[in-house]
Length: 140
Image 1 (tube, rainbow, N blue to C red):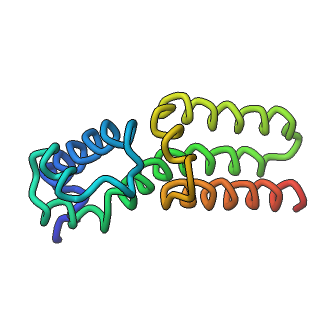
Image 2: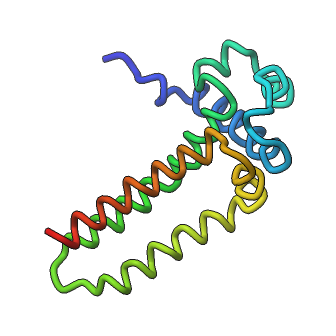
């Protein structure tokens, strides 16, 4: 059986290096303004390596931030499926999850919310999908 690329320890290590470098750069520069050359040079990886992970730095940042949020938001949707849950308490927990995420990446959020960034649009889409799931669960 062939191993998935995402299971390869080298792939994982290089992605972690790219992500760490991107998070550092994106704390002061909008991801759309970070070039692939700038990111790969700072991370010490090749352009080919970068393109095996994403199409652009903004795409990679969107993948990372949405990837961190989706499991947390999906967990909240799952909790809503249980009868007799306090929806007010669940919404409070959802807000705390979101606030924790924003706090953990506050420098990046302050940069991506300026203008109409690809990353910001990906996050909005993630939040809309989660909110739609919550409404569907409440009204079911």
